[in-house]
Image (cartoon, rainbow, N blue to C red; front, side, top):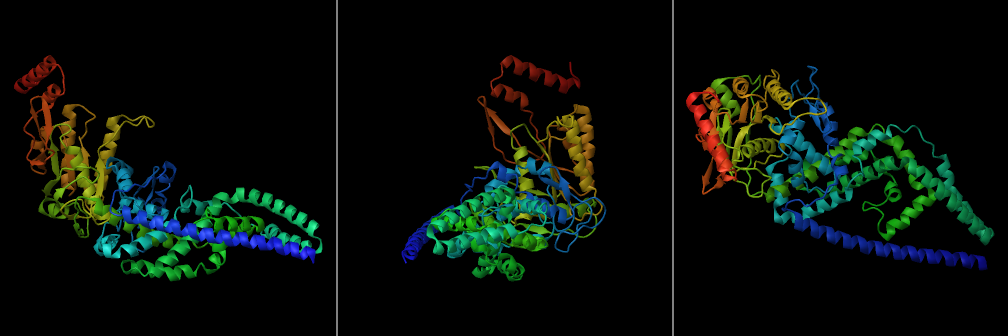
Length: 615
């Protein structure tokens, strides 16, 4: 009887400890919930303050890369994809097709254009997502803008509903659920799923034995208390050693199941919210979850709550899992069930990612000084190599009060371009910024349905740029070689016979890497070729000769500056016609160069203009 009382006292103390832990855990979760709600409420509609590690950012493109392959694109470098070029009609993963050349529901923005437009910065500015699924889907949207109206990701009604203060409580609830999903660890879930293929068949027999032995040792305590306790301690030590040895082998893979379980719970909670603007997404969830019924049965307790194991309750459950090898047993059974369910996992990631990304975009839109709903005309079927009025109608670019969304105090400009545009003006006058603003306006309109302008109308463009190029030391290529290769890719895209969508390209300083005579001659022919193929080309140049050579196929615009009392003032306002002033030498004086240098340079330039030659 004495031994029984000792055992009873031991378990009473243990039960008291568990109850206290449960109470403290509940209080901690309540405080964390209130803190999260306060943060979500205050951060919506403000510039993103999210800090993403370099390691995590390197994994964000994984959803994009995965769907590039499904859509018929193939990987091109670290972060980009290029169009499928085998002549076949690869599928986009939803039953629609991409003809060769990238036409179809979506178009992949290449690495050159992505870097030229500083899209990494724009993504960081837009990203206030709560989960890895949201991050990766938002990145995917920016890398693969829509080529048809039905491919636009969200409606204006969805954005408006999320931004409406009367729906704040519902929006915050959605964000709470998405926050519980969190991240998969140091890698993307797609990486983890690929890693699991390296594991073969695994036996649970050693772990079943580890789970039974503590109970046998506990039974010995009723026969002989001292011997039973010693046996229990020994079994616990053995289980701890074998647990951590095995856990070290599967630790990277273990993240897969913890994240998938959170994904399943997250999707289930999103479906229960019955959010009216995400009805189409959430109606698919029950059927998807049904295929995971055996996969998730009992696993939420074994692998931890959605919030993790940082609170006292989580710590107690963690020790239970370690002692009885419960998560190792579940890992092996789940591994067998995971294979063959990639499509369902991808669908759930897409649904949760879409909801998270939509909330993030709605928040970002509120940070803009103003924005417009773009009016985009779908291109008619057939090749875009039209000419004259037909080409102009298919490629018109009309923007009112267009601005660059990354600038703190942007200067807006308006343009109605029926033909390609040639920009002239001095350095730092605003040409490059305008080119980027025009490209971003088209890209954002097609990617998220928001234009950084007061009004914008155009078509569904394939957007390219050739701006911030540099020598390639690794490939041994000079700047000029890199430049002509960059322009050639745009020419190839503009001449792709299978593509319905016209090209919009932005080129800064055409062929700056070679001598003046050949630069002007080659630039004139390349730009004229763009006009012939119906390409909406925005090209900046210092070669005023091009304004006359191309005036029949390009509209001329320019930026200018004023130099007064030795001070340079830029208006950054777009003006019609070619530049009529040459202020580069005057800028030398304004920026402190010796007068003798400035005067001699001006005299040499005047002599060339009058005599037609240098000496």
